[in-house]
Amino acid sequence: MTDLKGRTALVTGSTSGIGRATAIALAARGAHVLVVGRDEQRARDAVTEIEGSGGSATFRLTSLVDLESARELVEWAIDAGNGHVDILINNAGVALMGPSNAATEADFDETFTVNVKVPFFLVASLAPAMAERGWGSIVNVSTMVASFGQAGMALYGASRAALELLTKAWAAEYGGRGVRVNAVAPGPTRTRMMEAIPDEMVNHLAALAPAARVAEPEELASAIVFLATDDASFVHGVTLAVDGGRVAT
Image: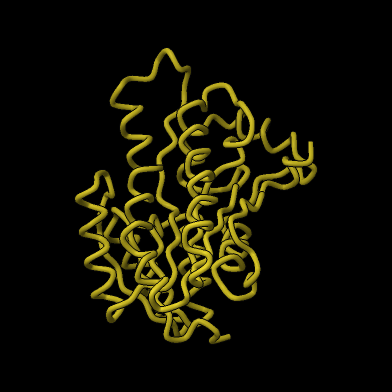
């Protein structure tokens, strides 16, 4: 399929896991994908895989840890996208686990900077130009624990809950000018971030859902690509639960 031919898609945190699977899937639909991550070899490998399948991609190494890094990414992305970014996937994030009384101010600041502040300013910088062109799509990657309390995940869940509210606010702000903003809320998924969570917690969370298993990154990528394309042309401001049915229990 080439329905995204001529579109540029910026996918943060796209050198592994859900981000990488999403970058590959968007490229397969014809988009020129901007791969963003911290590891050069993984970035090169992602681009090589995309190009090996006939797609188009470019990468940039960045940590996205503050406003300056977000603004530098925007400048690079516009240049690398021949003057435009049409799709933004806010996938990069950190998940610092543990009891609330063990969290430091630095933990708090890092979580909300990477998970909320950086996506906020990426959208603030890129969405107005999308609106001027009359087409754009933004998908924010949240988590199922933004919707219910989970011990040890207070910071992570709260930061993603903020992102889900921003999703609704941005949909209201930009939807009337052709920019759709949505989110996905993954359940347990086989990613590098998940490796930091004890197996017993992952298995417990997975067992609570009807699917009773851990998802593969490609399953999340399919949902993200759906929301990013005109397949979801009348979908604005939603958080799509891709959690094996945990939302139903």
